[in-house]
Length: 442
Ligand SMILES: Cc1cc2nc3c(=O)[nH]c(=O)nc-3n(C[C@H](O)[C@H](O)[C@H](O)COP(=O)(O)OP(=O)(O)OC[C@H]3O[C@@H](n4cnc5c(N)ncnc54)[C@H](O)[C@@H]3O)c2cc1C
Image 1 (cartoon, rainbow, N blue to C red):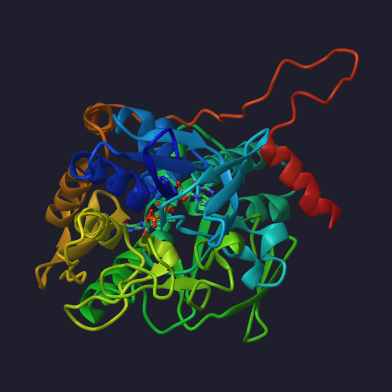
Image 2: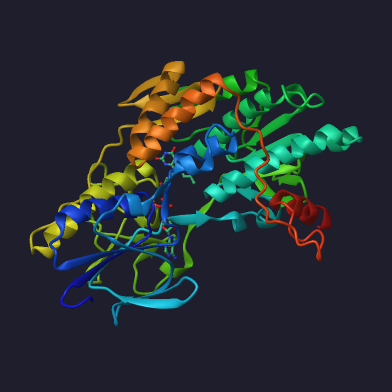
């Protein structure tokens, strides 16, 4: 508490947390101080991460600085370690540890990539959850092309130019489309490596891609990918990942120097608190997003299981739902603080869209199916509207138009500091080089 003010603390500054803070600023009286605690000081626009992988957009353009989105909220870039519901305080750390008292607390911490769910994935697979992950994969692909152009052994060249993607959901399909586009463009600049020399293998555990979309759109995506010589393997359950090798449940081995993992998410460890009702690690909420048995505690977004009054089902973990929950929760918290009744969360999704490369997408909007260029234009238009802050919208718009006229940036963005000449080799290694070494050591 600051002076006579009470503290409303939001943990997590992603889609849900940042939008909630924005909406609360206008609804909560001045005797409340709003705090937002988040590991990053920006919101990552996750739906565009595959575009970062494919070098269609620059990494900074999918990050919106939270401080530019909020006026009244006090922001702390920290990692929350524990929440004490009895003492009503949150412990966190940045460089130094710290504590914050709360009167109301909202969990909006999202989920983290669960690459430990498949043996060996943590060591040999590349997750796609953060901007850092996307940039790393982009660099890795470029690194493989650079190595393949100079490697004398055709077998090694084949391995370097084989890209395996695990998971045929939204991010897996979009990453596949982006990678295909990127390799097609890159062949102009890599004389010894052409798109036809590269293999993209998409592994999906069930019988159809994009399970969230209709079977017809999933079938269309499969057909288009196969026409582009993308090797899509359905019913291919990955059981283990080893050095540049994927083991399938069927016993088959798939070899490729780059293994991208788009499956698996798990809630953060600090949410596994005995006082919080949970299911599969996610916080179970009441219909109004309050947490039963705990006064002044709320949860939303991917870290929560919020029942949707529209269909009685838990909400899916999507940005669309996180955004709508945040709007409703701001109204509910404001009502609760005034001693008024809250309302259950109820929302019908407007639609789903997935970009599949080559300026094409598949989409289902208000139950109507679209595919091809029109769907892709809708995909771009909708995401442009959704990207936080006007400055990011403008940049993205310019960058997308720029990309119509100019090729994507194929520079290997290895960020390394000036080397200390006294310790040669310590400062100039890129992340990709160190992964290659790690793989070869294994
Ligand atoms: C590659 C990818 C593609 C996607 N594509 C789509 C799409 O096309 N359409 C769609 O609707 N959804 C998509 N999603 C899902 C969508 O991004 C999520 O549903 C949405 O981000 C959920 O919002 P959130 O606020 O709950 O979590 P997040 O946006 O993940 O935010 C969580 C926040 O909590 C913070 N945090 C975590 N732990 C701590 C801690 N201990 N202390 C402090 N802060 C912490 C994080 O730093 C982050 O700021 C995609 C996700 C990914 C990864």
